[in-house]
Image 1 (cartoon, rainbow, N blue to C red):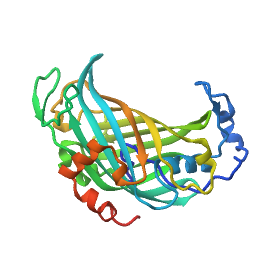
Image 2 (image 1 turned 135 degrees about the vertical axis):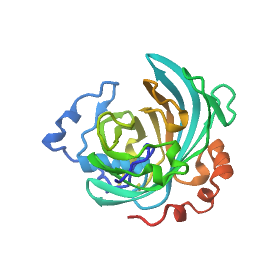
Image 3 (image 1 turned 90 degrees about the vertical axis):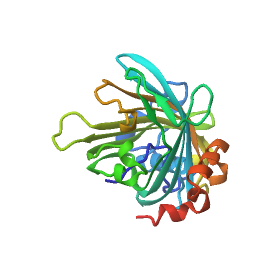
Length: 301
């Protein structure tokens, strides 16, 4: 399976022309006024993918880094329980396969902090069960990834094998994954693009998924940069929300609930431009990603 990691990222693509071409009939819905006060941008699928690409990755194969600052909650029987603050980073290189598809290599790290004090967490008391569990920094990858305007894929879920202490974060099985870009809206000098991601993992007997993760982001980039054929890569900001099954390390088997996350993030064009606290944690736990991240990611597929 080509795995798209939590998707703080996007991909490079063909440059947009100075004027946006008329959309084909299948894109007619994008011509309607945006509900937030902006105006729906008339972009073809290749143009939409390219704009998203330069915002969240690059149109060439350079290394780019995404970052996320989010709060995680447990949601159990309609009640919400704060768990931790999460700082995450993604390290990515991609290449374009055709007008509607990118592939690449990605690695994600995440570090956990007390919501109140901001101190790094090593132990966490879970709600409802009262269990005190170990909290360890997360590192997943390097993994293959894919991106399109609309994708549905399936196969073997490999994240447990591709992650540090992977059995604590993932369950094995077969996966069904969907990913889509939609709702490009121009609001003044800014273009907003929505991305939806969903992964469900099923055991050998089928039935309910043994693991699931879904996220929704709104990526913002300068309108002029989105349309400028000379711009291959641009910084972006994004809003983020997600829902996920309890991770095995949380020891919540038998509890009918899941986690919720919301936060903000973005993409930067150098490792040094990542938020200072993320760099501090990476130096402590993942120094190889600061020394030579391209080598760690390995060759592009």
